[in-house]
Structures are given as structure tokens and as C-alpha cells.
Length: 189
Image (cartoon, rainbow, N blue to C red; front, side, top):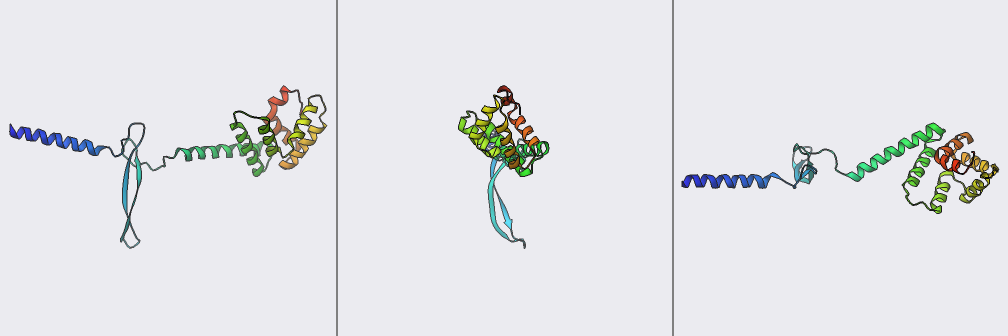
């Protein structure tokens, strides 16, 4: 009986010891398990120099994750790819230089992020994108609503020279970006 009691006690102690060693960071199915690991660093002759220690993340299978778990970096990479694709689209469709296409893509992205747009935001967007005075745009659009397109045509010409492309391409770009607003206000570009 005494030997059975000792065997049971030993089994409980072993199980408790195994459970205590099982989880390094309290990971679950939804987050990786993590451990602070140290690795010896040697010089080119094979002599020990120091230990390099850092946190490593393990996946569900218990293998070290090779990629960083930096969500912000991943999101920034995705945004950079989207921005690059938008720039390629504008460059190809409107015959813009890659620099001008990237400028357009950045301005469109920045403008689309704003939820509550004020008149100052719209004026700033127009100034950055087209390189023309926002007050001149307001005046030209107001006159274009009653059929006087001379000022608007002059602004399109100025924007085309700023973009280093033709007036036709600039008009097509403006229609793509502002087509609904132009149509709603009865402006034929």
C-alpha cells in the first residue's frame, strides 16, 4: 500500500511538472505561443562570443514563426502596394509621368481618407492635385454652370501643363475623379 501511495504521489508530481513546463507564454489557438530564447554567437574561428536573446513566436504546430507579427508594418506594405497600383493606373490611362501619377494617387488617397470634408479640405486637395488656385476653380466652375466655359478651359490648360500631359488627358482625369459632381452641376467638360 505504501508503494502504491508513493507511485501515485510520484505520478501526480510528474504530471504537475509537465503541465508547468508546457506553456511558455500562455498562447491559445488565436495567438501564438512565445518564448524568450537565447542562442550562442560565435566568431569566424568558432570561439564563443556572447548569447543573443530575443522573443520568438511559435505557431500552433510548435514551429518558430519566421515572419514578423507586426500588423502595422503589414498594413503599411499593403497600402504602399495599393498606392503603387493606383499610380500605374493613372500613368497608363492618362499618359502621366510616374512622378505625376504618384502625386495624383497620393492626393486621391489622402482625400478619400477624410470623412468630414470641409471647403478648406477641398480647396487644399485642388491646390495640391492640379496646382491651380482654388478660388479660380470656384469662379470657373460657377461660370461653367451657366455655359461660360472659357475660364474652366484655361484652368484645364494650366493643369495640363502642370501634369506635363495633354489637355485631353487632363480632361479625362478630371472626369474620372469628379465626373459625378460635374454631371450633377450640369457642367460639360
